[in-house]
Length: 562
Image 1 (cartoon, rainbow, N blue to C red):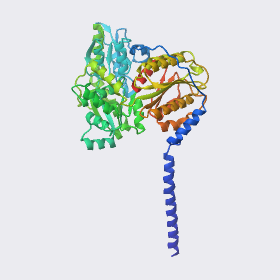
Image 2: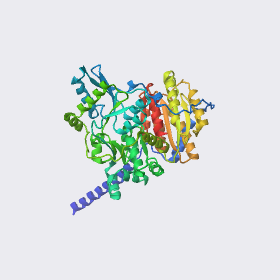
Image 3: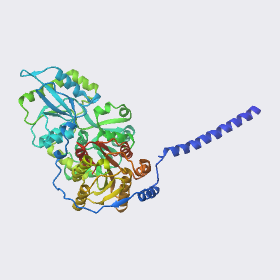
Image 4: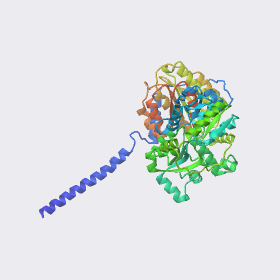
């Protein structure tokens, strides 16, 4: 009996301990599950007001500047072509330069074409008794198209990811010859979380681009895609989506109305595939677009996501560009034949290419001028019925003096043409203190003139209170949201250095998380880890640019987001 009593006591103690562990475990989980910086909206408002009161803020006199109403000339913002590296150097004086998309002229699994071109150059081919070779330049398809169409730099040949870019070049009146329809096989697709995929298949019977756009339109799928001005997969998806609403007239009223409803429920447009993948890792997205070659090389995706093909194939066509001399055209054709050899196609398979070869393009051939119009439609409709309110926050500390401040001005003056009349814009600058150069206002001609005037008046001096500038921008946006609840807030921070005055990231992280304002950061010749951390909080992009390419990069960013 004594032993039984002891047993009951022990069991009782165990029960108490288990209960305590469960109770406190739940509470610990609850507490640790919350971000240390998570705060309520009411507390955030009080904290924002308190931080704002601690900052020395002045409002500058409004100065009008002279605006240029001419459309953006893409060539003017493009950096020198040397910004895009040569991945294979020619070995002879008689050679052709080929612009190549990045998934095949990079490194590792993305370096297939480089290996083939290196072997080609080592093979000592001759044409008409003269040794020949190729030079490969690694450059994104959309950017390459900008160079060619603007005439700023035209290669001998071009191998984009898909034929859509070739059609756009051709529509510009530039002479093109399709030398090879396929150098290597690849396709674009939507990568969907397995759980969400099963739910959609159960409802729709199958998953394809039509059921995907239907699910997004009905707010059943949170999907992101990439910038159709720069990304091959993004452009492909745009055209494929328009086709689901009216395949006979991609830009007709029915297609446009369908696209507006669909786009209103798209939570995320990424400037790059990398930015989109990072957003997907946070669990924000159920699905996103990707090329099969990248999908098959990503173990974390293959195990938890399903790949659904769409649109035109990404078979890396090869074009001769411009009035190419016969001798150069012969080199291009010789290279295309060389690429087709079995060993190089087997090498491509090892690197993730030439998969799903039974997939046939769902789209009929699309005229290049229609593609340009589709991009324009996307630019006009991508934000749905929610206009943007954005505040630009510019670093005018002493370290920005000279070329950095000149490039900042130039990049903003070029980029402001992309801002859109339906949006509202404000402008803040900071050094030791913060100046509201331009209160938020509708971006009409008058606001544009004052925005230009504010930019032109900037002078660099003093310390770097970056987070004070962000606090002021957040306060301006919260006041704007109180007046216009439907606007989508954004902040763009342009800086060259680490914060050395004012508030810290820890002081404002909770506010950024609570208000969910995406903060896009642009570093000038800098490695600004704190700014990168800010951008990552709400899946915004960070650009680390130098003075040679910052104008182009900012123009692209504003074109996507504004």
